[in-house]
Length: 172
Image 1 (cartoon, rainbow, N blue to C red):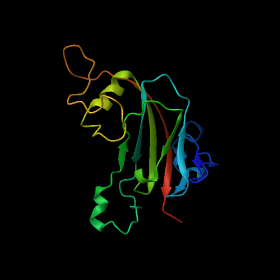
Image 2: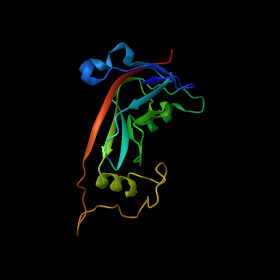
Image 3: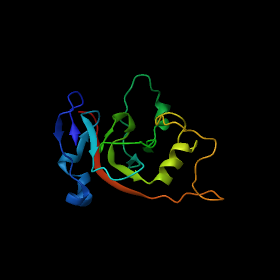
Image 4: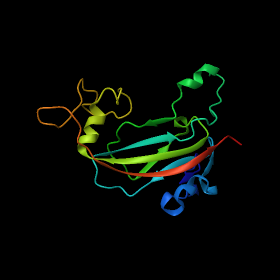
């Protein structure tokens, strides 16, 4: 959904892959102008230990969109084209995509993962993937991640995933 950033009233509904296939990226309702509205992914919650969201910029040569007077030209290299959230302990089936997580124009893929307990515990306790800000769960930031493997290390995890594709256009 595209929501009004101030009132959170629905402004539009994006076309999904099962409706449009790869044409979802070019569908008029999936053409989003940078910083206009609030993108919210809505899904039917499933039985899961937690959720994780990720954003992927799919066009490596696309234009940099962040225009802030405090940025120097060399700061552009500090912005990632993909990233993911820390594990989210619970959800109502709604996850917002803040514009600060999007820095480039072009096609983007926004995914939500429903995690099993093994993947959830690994993510929240691995200092390499969870540097200590974001999840706020008791027990986060262990020196060694929880693996749930008797006598060894490793990850046997599963997740289900859903996604929406859209194209970010420069500001009007």
